[in-house]
Amino acid sequence: MKNIRYLFFIVTVLLFVSCGSVQKSRTFRPDATRLNLSMSDLVYLGETEISVKYNVYFGFIYVIDEVNGEDYSSMDVKKTSLGNIANMLSGPIHKSAYKVLEDYPEATYFQPVFNQSKIERLFLGREIYETAKIRAYKFK
Image (cartoon, rainbow, N blue to C red; front, side, top):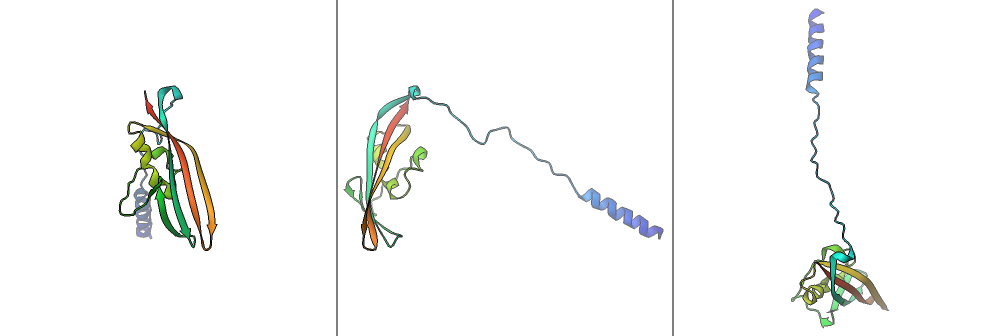
């Protein structure tokens, strides 16, 4: 009986010792940085209107006809990612964003003014013409 008590005591102690503690370390850097700018910190360069014309068939087949008034070829593609306005340029209109950088290559900040869609209903599809106006700025 005495051996069983010692065995039980040793097993209990080993169980409590094996339950280690968790240590957490944290860095003191913020998850997000914030930069406060005002319009006096920026120089206005101008604004550009971009456009795309495409057809949607059966709700999921997209056929792009024109990008910025020129015929679209899927073999000759120009891509540009404007980080701060990515939410506004969702869908096929993001294919026309290259024109903003062609017109204002020295720009560092882009501000969307409006995004407009004209939709013409067709049989089993629709024809969509999207336009957006984007202002370009650079830092002083």
